[in-house]
Image (cartoon, rainbow, N blue to C red; front, top):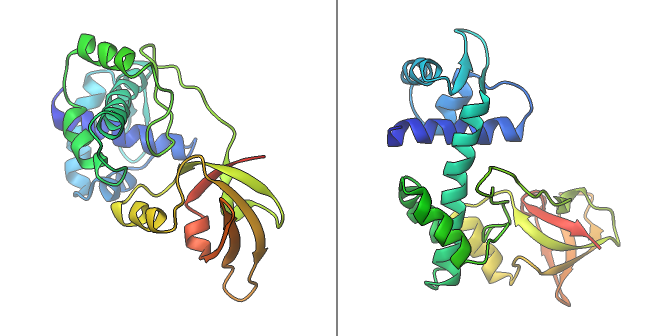
Length: 217
């Protein structure tokens, strides 16, 4: 596959995991910031290769081969993110763009050796699951911080927004994967949350809370 074909497969995979429904051409175009006509051309190519199910004016879904191929691209991306953070000292807000380039390396042997070198991690630095070499994913029970009730507590296990700006904000607030977060109260006016993070109280917006995944304690 070309880099472009891999990027389309990965985008379709992410869109289908966010929603069980088939994805539209317009949704793919919006996600990839391109024209719908360009998406249609690529979808035809992917369908001819047996990687997606596609009919004009209907939704798009991955075939079994397409889903496995997409998972392998995601696997490479997330393993490289772990390597960059754990072995090269990059911060979690720096690694996405670099991993976008590294994920297109074709050597399966290299990626499997990288996986073993990193002790076979199951999650990337943002808390997203890493598919194993067969495409299996270990899922953890999690929910958004904004969905908790007052006086509930959880451990931060992931972020929904992986943008550099959001991750830098979390660093300033000393919120990281593994942080214990206690939900103290919610402000009815703007739905902001009063929380305690590792013993320190602070107020965060509902938008922030809606992008933080926690595992209940």
